[in-house]
Image (cartoon, rainbow, N blue to C red):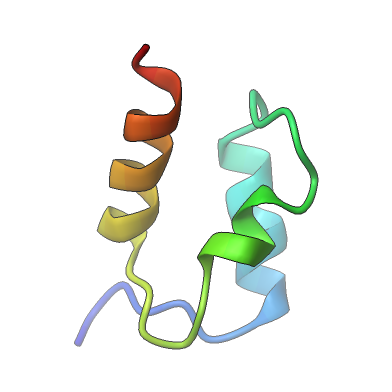
Length: 50
């Protein structure tokens, strides 16, 4: 499956994309081996939409 996240380097990269995250640990908590880019986008959208 494409867009799988496989390592900490990718988490660092995503932190760069979502620089408005208010908690450094946010993405680390949300990401596991089966997480896709779309999953993270959805979680961040849900977190910040309201």
